[in-house]
Image (cartoon, rainbow, N blue to C red):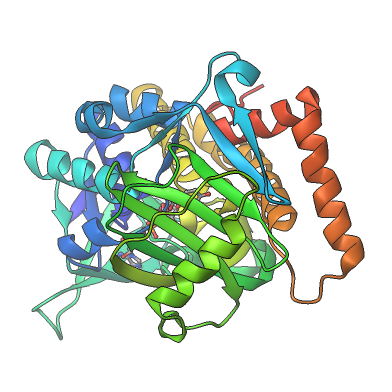
Length: 397
Ligand code: APR
Ligand code: PHB
């Protein structure tokens, strides 16, 4: 089997890359180890920056998003039982974000790819990458139901879009790799609940008992998170304990109330910051979670993946049309500038709002002072609003 661009992984990064290449008339094959149902149901964040929304529209994948996505013009910061709204358009010259779950982005892209695009193989697990720095990189893979037999996909370029646990990154020799990493002593316990969101915008709450986040999937489905110690299992918390704790952390001095409803899903997300440099080795290009992870507090993971594949699709198209590798050569550095801005913002939001297990009163006061600063200074507020609504997609300067 041969193709122009081999893509490992059908998360948002791999699917959007395939779509952008298809629009540019470039052939690709996508290998995804899991089945379609799994990819379409996996719960992740769902905050789309304006740039992400624009890309999905341009890629012809924005129709349902435009109908069902919810435009949000702000978020609320909650601390000391007080509420402070950040007004995005007012602070950023009109920018906002769109709430449209990653599951829905994936469903839309999968439907388009199966209808119009090149092969998208589910149940096709990449086992390893060979000759990444040669002229014809190869992926060895195994298809479900054909155990004992290995297939090979040979390609001109290879995109590693296989997430943090994938195999593509392992093909980059340690001698040329540099890894930057932080783990955090806490995780997020997330629930989906069949109840209308208790607020019409996201609420990020800092509390002495830990962080809490109110988000949503639709006008009738809430998504909520609680900071819990790293290593916590979801079963350790009953639904009632979760609601009680959310109520404590979201408490305000006014008459705001948390609505409760049946919990339909419960899971724990670990928190990590991670960057692998460079994002390119020979003809292998890493994109999305395969190259970098941010803690979810800044809602940047999906948007970063989109930034990577837009840059990559543009560079591959340029190379195919002109024969010039200049944009491919710039790929890693171009992406990393944006990646590190998102790493910084996600780290700042995380450490501002979470309570470390060993935090003392000094750190508590510093967090509150920083939140006061944001709530009372237009400059500080603008800084947050600009980062939250998104960094430019092409920081080429
Ligand atoms: N072979 C084939 N597919 C693989 C392999 C493999 N060896 N290993 C992993 N995959 C698949 C996974 O099953 C998954 O569907 O690669 C895909 C990677 O998708 P994501 O983890 O969603 O990563 P990415 O597309 O980079 O998305 C980045 O969206 O999913 C969120 O939290 C993520 O916000 C981040 C952003
Ligand atoms: C979500 O809706 O899942 C979500 C929203 C904002 C975040 C993280 C997750 O910062």
